[in-house]
Image 1 (cartoon, helix red, strand yellow):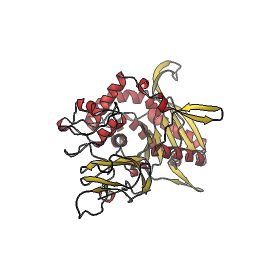
Image 2 (cartoon, one colour):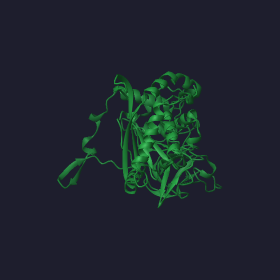
Image 3 (cartoon, helix red, strand yellow):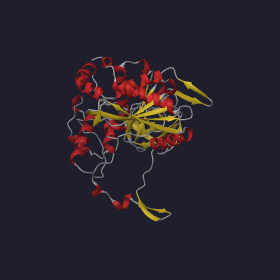
Image 4 (tube, helix red, strand yellow):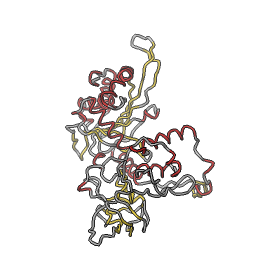
Length: 430
């Protein structure tokens, strides 16, 4: 049975083998992850659709090949076995190729480096681990003994992704980084510079980081960037969010964050300022009918921008649900390539990391990108010269100065500011 490079989305034409999870000669169970691949901004595991033995690896790690090319072979022991893909994208929904959170009871765990240098060999006879949990364990250097000691909240006591992340949060809060345990001599190499030789740690860029780097350079080359900054009084929204938080979660099942307020205010402003919901195409400007809002999501490996399609046709609750779903699937590595294309304007929120404001780079080929800063309480002089404590936030809009003038940008960011300061809370629906 052939393992082929799957198509994870209509726009994907090639993929890169990140890592083989099995060696030639290793036994493989049905649905067990065999190889990790990446396609542009998406990386995922490819499971076997039948059990057997990995008899051949045809594509080395780090190699990029076309969709449909054979990358390995599994000997199933069936003489009548025909060529088939480990992940036939034509028959799978968006996001296919990502191993499920629960797996067959007979599944074996792929090898992974442990804290003490030993491998994660196999699951215990009475407990099983999903490929997602094992991947996190590999990346965080958690050995099998520690995995087996964790209490699982999944079916039958299974350790879930959330269980593992909770453990990692607790570990980080009480254990400092093990800098003293690192082999300093092996981590730094001599690098020649004009001023002499220096010691440096070499960090190879993965496919996602390379893609981001190319996109950022391209954006700066294509668009003359200008950034406008405005200050918005978020007191009204912040107070309402605190008052409605519990009701909203009871009704929708998700937390009420500031993000849907931002998105709603942006969508309303784009309706009033269609020039910002546009793309420059040679000597003409395309003003899009619908708002496809890109939402920047920060991951450990980099930033991805999934898209809320036709956000202009959604109410507040639908926007909140869509933003929550995209962010969750981004962190769970379950976005499809099609989730990342077609945006007409982008929101990024560096404020969630206590950044005061930023000067974001435009997500091409859009007209602009808005960054929201951290919300901080400040003493503000009111219109009547009295002093008051208010929740203030900076908005920063980077725009393409080829076809967006300062006046257009000023009106747009002014409208967003007003939309937030006078937000109609009835739209939240709770």
